[in-house]
Amino acid sequence: MKQGIFKISQNEKLVENVYKMVLVGDTSDITACGQFINIQLDGLYLRRPISVCDCDDTSVTIIYKVVGKGTEQMSKMAVGETVDVLTGLGNGYDLSLSGDKPLLLGGGVGVPPLYMLAKELKKQGKEVSVILGFNTASEVFYENEFKALGCDVTVTTVDGSYGVKGFVTNAYPDEYTYFYTCGPEPMLKAIYKTAKTSGQMSFEERMGWGVGACMGCSCKTMTGYKRICKDGPVMQKEEILWET
Amino acid sequence: MGDLSVNLCGLEIDNPIIPASGTFGFGYEFAELYDINCLGTFSFKGTTKDARFGNPTPRIAECTAGMINAVGLQNPGVEKVISEELPQLKKCFNKKVMANVSGFAVEDYAYTCEQLDKQSQVGWLEVNVSCPNVHGGGMSFGTSPEAAAEVVRAVKAVTTKAVIVKLSPNVTDIVAIAKACEEAGADGISLINTMLGMRIDLKTRKPVIANKMGGFSGPAIFPVAVRMVYQVANAVNIPVIGMGGVSTAEDVIEMMLAGATAVEVGAANLINPYACRDIINDLPAAMDKYGIDNLKDIIGGVK
Image (cartoon, rainbow over all chains, first blue to last red; front, side):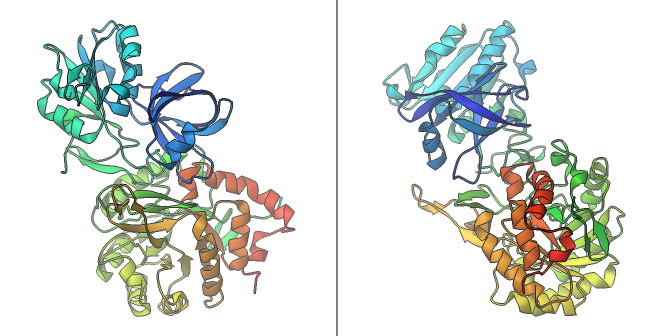
């Protein structure tokens, strides 16, 4: 974990209510795909945890949806403004288990953390399939970005207005060796039930500070109590215990 | 540089800054960030006789100038705290730690305190009779002078170390409870625990917190905490630890003027993980600014 001041170099709308922000600063503590950062905002007490979409030596990209006060405030921030950010939080995805043909499934703003993962898997020479799920055509983002990485990309929309009609689980490829996913809990549950292979899922929870001491985001797993912020947000399929 | 040391129930501490229970784990998460030996001490995660998972999530809600938590005393149980957490803490903290204890029956408190009292790393026992987040325990002992006194007597009978009773602000007369604890043999009083609060999500029309209500903390409750510390410190003759929304070195001085011998810092740790270190570093300049050479001199300075 590292605390640092980051400068906003980009903050633009991708689709309705979804924004992409690029923050310039010390990214040295971001060590794995699927980690998150925790952003302090003026006038708000708790930090806002957002997953890392992409990262290089000097900048980190996040994609966020406006769902409340904090994200609304973020959407109005201007290029050049600075924010206090905790980086390098969470465990991230384990790439070593991917096999040759990993499948990445993202739903809505669960798509962003898969981007950096896809990039890294492609670097390792994997044959990466990606299924991006949205409600409707106007919500679709990052299809071309994943294609540009050389991934085989399928888009699904619930209303059928774009790509395959239905959910990400309606579009499994014939063959895949392992899966990685992030998205709303009903989607994760559906994947848990229908995926043919083992895999990893990234979870979301309201957090105190994101570094593991307050027990605000605990969950029960097959292997004991875990903290989404510190032991997660990524869990192995085999350790997940659905409570409802 | 001025003198920051204070004497807390017979033990000298380098400075009065103590991270509050539940915001600092068992210390080692923070030891990855800074040398926690700079602290006066810290109060570790509330420990019960048996392991507890606590409440369902969401356990956390944002508020103006504060937050609500309803963790519900998640902890590994006293046996594992002694066999696993304390040895791990020993690697990064060479001072005495404050053991925070909660329970659901008088005998639970006594048992857990007795076990922790035997640990050489433990300097003080902070007995929490004020957790607002568990049903049928915790706070129910802290809302009546008789029940609080009964816990104190039971704990004092089986321990040798200083017993500090952590009180709830969710009562009609905190002074009566503090006095009852003092008469029962308490060596110190710490206050305030969180205030019972609630938030509602306008979209779902449901409480934000799964447990519906939770403990409200943060800068918003600071004036209430200063008032209660002042009232209690003026009514008892044992040391008082002040807490509730403390975030800056100035807040520490204000708490001490109100009557606190030492000061716990809670929610601020979650906003700025370096909060306690920063407050300790800022204290000498703040003391200079207000003409304070020795922090001990200002305890209870306001009459």
